[in-house]
Length: 304
Length: 259
Image (cartoon, rainbow over all chains, first blue to last red):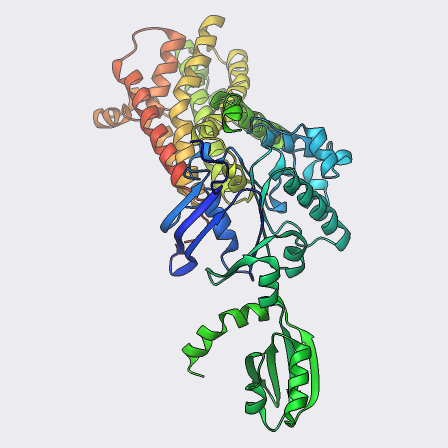
């Protein structure tokens, strides 16, 4: 029960989970090594939350094996060093903030004292308030603080800053970074690229239950940091065949091209002498970037 | 690191008390829920037993009526509090969060038993007081105390049945199932009509129900006499079977809301 210090804290081995006909997680294999700050990125419905619930022991995999600290996460003993956040709407409304912290903290051996945790997450003035009276941002901070009350070795944060304003997000990010620096291994899910950019060292991109990319931050950014070029042209097919175009779809009388480097593409386009007008460029949204990662498979299937 | 933390791990007893404590704190923050539980059985006694003087003026009948209603009160409290609270909590996101914490299933089941058990015992106090003031029911104080303890013991199967229903059904289905179970157990168990009025075949069936066993057990504790073997055996068997069913339902549960 006492694994080597650098053994993975969590491990998924060809894990699948279906809900009836829906495959939420499909053949996922990955390790969470100690000391890392991992970003789990993907659009809604990509399987991120299901993946976390497998690690939390809330659900059992329908295929493969899930390991947490060398044990089965369904077993309470395997979760002694795991911290996670409730949804912010989940906090019991009638309990005070201090009581909720003590309730959760009471489960762990070397728990952080309530006042210390409150100071770290800016909750000192809220300890006597019932959670039902808190604002959305305050509930978020309580929820994230709860993940750290047991001095966990592995922390799972599901969308920790969704719905917060810019300042509140940065404050929370700083707190998460400090916790990571003091030794916690953290997995953060998000569908915001900037959140993952701000926090993660290693990034796992999920889409439709699959792992699409699993790499360090700069390399994943290079793959999902795409641009969208919109233009009209009488020679659309030839424009789409230029180098750097990852994806092409017509949109009414316009052509929409997803490219990996907008500057390079414009240079190549001008150099080629092909006809074009009404050109606009904008950064691709994460959703569009994900589509391009899955694109080869889509194109083959639709026979285009 | 691992060995250092193992030594001070909170015990299952400590975790049980932790969950029971905050569950009671939550309940008492909405006092109307508590008042309902405490007032309902007292009203039932006032309306259904006190006006019937043939029963109310006869010490033996009155005492048995008070006991039957106390068993009914404890049973209703146990079935509803456990069944509905659990079914409702499973549909709220706080419950799945609690399941990610390192508390074994047995600690959470026992915490439910403890916290709702306290409420159930509070609910029979007004029944005893009204019974003493307005009916001929009588028993020495130490016998009443023995009756309350017996009530607590015989309530275990009802609590566990409530827990099992809570984990087995979604909220709306749980309401219907609990009502059917409640009236079936109350009638067949002789809580509404005394079993002496039963036909032989019904009396035989009645002896297998936890409500009949609870009634006889408490009557024995208050009035003395012989305790039939099927009473205590039945309570033990129901407790053991429902405990293992509750635990397996708890482990199987994934806070599932949809199929």
